[in-house]
Length: 400
Image 1 (cartoon, rainbow, N blue to C red):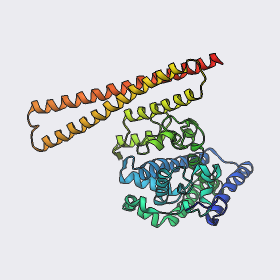
Image 2: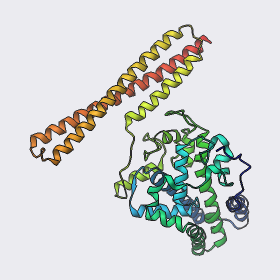
Image 3: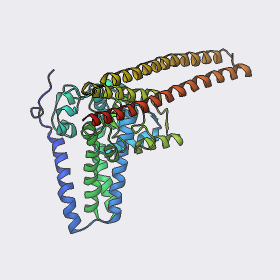
Image 4: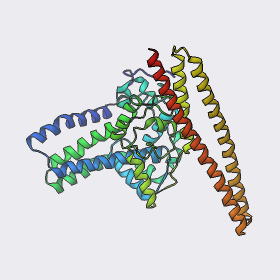
């Protein structure tokens, strides 16, 4: 079925009015009230705190927990994320997660991706929610696991009531406690909604436009530290689309990903478990494949006199890369076999003796050491490829 053009689908008036009114009040009403009456420090802190609670509940809860099952959350933490996610006013967990799963499955497909960036910035950012596009039709067939979650089911069934009550009563209560109901409602009730909305929407739009692609170029997702700063770590989007089940988006320790840090912290106190991590070897493999692809593209467009020598050098590196991948595959198979055998022997009581137990520990240690050696081999090849690219670019500049 061919997708409906961006301006041909029926307008969703309730959603359009909600986005329009909240944005106008935030853009006009907040500054006017600020100039005529003023806001104090406590009101700004209430607004920033609720923005953070809503935002992190979308990224750690709606996104990494429910959409991707990147970890398991304790009942209390799932309840917490469900409450503040509802307060973020971005639809129910079930609607949000099922749509996001379709986005990953059909990324950049204008007919099936609910917010394909190939239909333009406006469409991917907010336009997809303003009209009844076929690509945005609700379909929960990919979220049967979520329908079994009592928190998800309850929130979805009562979403409108929960969303309206939390977005009216909570700012109102804070306003009564503070003493300035109107000012608090403007900051905590309206400006907070607009900020939370558009920081989330940046992930669908800007994170598919700005940045680099160190892991894959098969889709439009980009890695951008700036977008990560605005979206609680979600800006490392190229990594995420290639390794969507990893609880981390910023995989390097120094990359800004407060959502990753929160999930890790929750695991330390028993509120999160089974954190899923992609093996380092597989991450380096993806990076090196991209380096080979980019180097090959540069070679194809080059006119250097000694181009064949550069090609030969790159081909040699690629052959070494394939050998390492083959060894890793074989070792992975051996590791699974060893692990399976150890479990079988344990069930049969074969590990009761101290000697047998030590033997299996030694075998596992040996396999782990070989894995580390292969990871180091890829790390060194990654550095050689980077040096290769720099030298090739320098040679091109000298020729020019």
